[in-house]
Amino acid sequence: MDPLSRQALEAFWMPFTANRQFKSSPRLFTRAEGMYYWNHDGRRILDGAAGLWCVNAGHNRPEITDAVARQLATLDYAPTFQMGHPLAFEFANRLVELAPGDLNHVFFANSGSESVDTALKIALAYHRVRGDASRQRLIGREKGYHGVGFGGISVGGMVNNRKFFGSLLPGVDHLRHTLDHEHNAFSRGLPEWGAHLADDLERLVALHDASTIAAVIVEPVQGSAGVILPPKGYLQRLRAICDRHGILLIFDEVITGFGRLGTPFGAHYFDVLPDIITSAKGLTNGAIPMGAVFVRQHIYDAFMQGPEGAIELFHGYTYSAHPVACAAGLAALDIYEREQLLTRAASLSDEWERVVHTLRDAPHVIDIRNIGLVAAIELEPRKDAAGARAYEALTKCFERGVLVRVTGDTIALSPPLIIEREQIAEIVDTLAEVLRTIN
Ligand code: PXG
Image 1 (cartoon, helix red, strand yellow):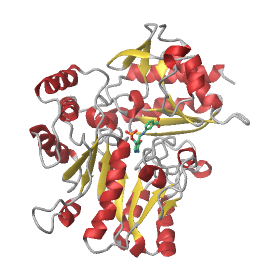
Image 2 (cartoon, rainbow, N blue to C red):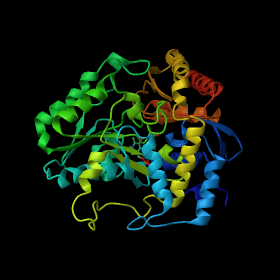
Image 3 (tube, helix red, strand yellow):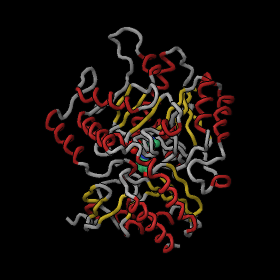
């Protein structure tokens, strides 16, 4: 069967994809290395998206491949319910060294979505085990993306990800988002205006009463909704309000974790210590699915009470701390350390900012946002065809050998952290050319 025929492509129901459109003009990757993919007809494509924001050290790193192969041949699988294997503990120890403050315990999951559900469940159970069971509300934020589990879409704030799926979790509310073109369009780095938007949490506290609120979850930088930045001082203010009212603060760092902003975690970048951090993606350099939830000492301690023989948290996955994922993660951490990739974005971010902002005068561009090694170029939507212009830009960039990501009419860039200056220029030059050719 021709692998590109309609018939060959039919059975796979593709995620977050216009299936019929894709299957009539498919784009298949068949190989990858470093900064590049190769497609089915052998064309090389520069990866401006790190896959889906996950391949931070670049593709097909032999150290990861070897570690995975060795681990599969040594211990393919081991349970971690009332059992263990050495790599699970070794990986957790390495990870907590990297995490900020006393975020010194790790619960393993298999994806960002599972990490988010794990974090929300830990937050609810934390209050309950401390005898504060009335704290059951969860607060998310408009335009937030926290994966696709019921917990994640409930606290999430992207309308299409929610509206098809019924009434979701009860007792959830949302902070207003921080995107503001009027005050902040074309800000370089963090916008100056809008720290007070954090006070929206005080409004929700006044409405619901702090005694009913368990946790607030936010992405330090909103990724999926199109790289929406926290105004200067916003996250500090959110932390202070949470402290004032005994509310846990969860940072969803599935994208911002592992070097995307030029620091190991976003919490380092903003110098704000959350109570819980969720991560995935760069955790294993995208090579093997895995998620990790970091919790602070006081949270772990709250559970370590009662009889020693009692299970403290009734939660976990068959594949929590899968040995092959741990092997991939340990190898990824070795690469990050040896090549100093978790801080590399900081040394490139000035150049990155300068170059992406040259698109300011390109046709259709209404905003550009950047931080670390991530950027958004927001286009004016076509009348009555939201998303069409950016999607056309994506396909034209792809034809010219550059992979970008789009959400709505925003083009998002988040290349592997090994990117070189010439490759930054190539991505932006290609975009500039494409924007000139589309209407
Ligand atoms: N939280 C955040 C902040 C994320 O960005 C998830 C949770 C869910 O992770 P999993 O592993 O369950 O997919 C994510 C995932 C995009 C895009 O192009 C973003 C994500 C996934 C796929 C596409 O914006 N983020």
